[in-house]
Length: 482
Ligand code: 4AD
Ligand code: MG
Image (cartoon, rainbow, N blue to C red):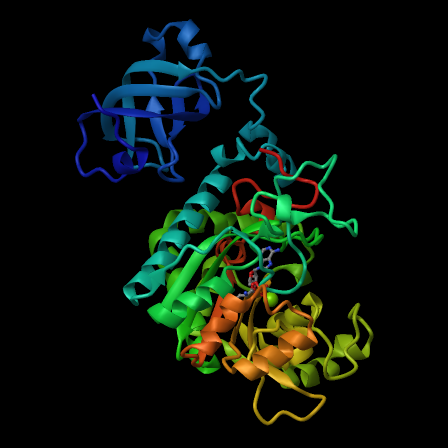
């Protein structure tokens, strides 16, 4: 007999059938009621054991975490809380779980920190089951969105020689030995003797390679892991995270903003439509967590309301220059409550500023655009008609409540001469990026794209507050367990 998923059993339309369910015991009450979960849904199926006719030996082995198989009749449940339950006729323990040793005991209400240390087992809790199912559905929604629109999915390399963001936050990739490292005459590491015969690193972004494909296939997107060795030990940064990077030929910055907004609204709607039970559970979790916070720090909206709000309201589009004016005149700036006081145009925005704009001033998602050229990456298009000394680029960042920056993107500098000038000024090796410059040498055209940090999206949709809790095995400074 093949077993049936718990989700399908709970959605069944007929009763009194003999069914087989397999899963892990969540709880066992009164020597009679097993709450069985198999990961297909947040809901457990109640299995009622005929304890009078079950040997004590077996009953003792029904412990939290044990894997069991039950065969029985699916009947309407008399108890509140579930429509169906299984009247067990045959129970088999597939794998024992020592109650003294299994660390995830529901009674103890394990902390998020403790669960992080047990990342391989935390997925057996309701919370992490829900998060990881939502993550999976969101990832499907990403592909759905772009595939329906005719975008080509491109797999850009993980190992590369380029630093797309020019921020120098790269993990080196090498097969050279650490002792007796081959050196050149002037004492530098001789990468000519390395595996790739050049210096390589893990990619920080697939954008540059993605651009070359957009300039042939028209509309492309990437969706893959990216790596940053930035030492930011925050609740928003991972050293290994997943990024979605669409790139579209002939799009300008306005088209880029439209695409990003439409895309984000689509994937959130998709999750709302397809993860109702999980999102309801996560909404309850968030309310619970916020009970312990002072009123002022609690969110104004419950999770589902917040997600619907994003669907129903346009993102507010604000230029960097307008944002600086707002920030300069803001109460926290005047009262010196910001850690970094905004004095003049040109200042880089810190997350405290971004969050002020989104959470206090506009109270909705914000797209900031036209940033000062010198705080943004080399490939962004220089605006025409900017004052000397006040050059801006066609950049955009999307800021979300509770998250800060969720998207970074731009229209690209399509003019060969302007791009070369910029690279020279920043001492970026033209030789090394000669292939990239070819897109501007042969058939260059306006194009634009952006990067969405997938985990930041999952954070927003699940209402979790630490990015380490929305990726199965987080990599952060000092942590690469599992
Ligand atoms: O703003 P970023 O650095 O932009 C790029 O990499 C561009 N090449 C994208 C493009 O135009 N194709 O990163 C894009 C997004 C950020 O907005 C943020 O959501 C996420 O990636 N991100 C991180 N997420 C988690 N941990 C980190 N350390 C992240 N760094 C960036
Ligand atoms: Mg950015």
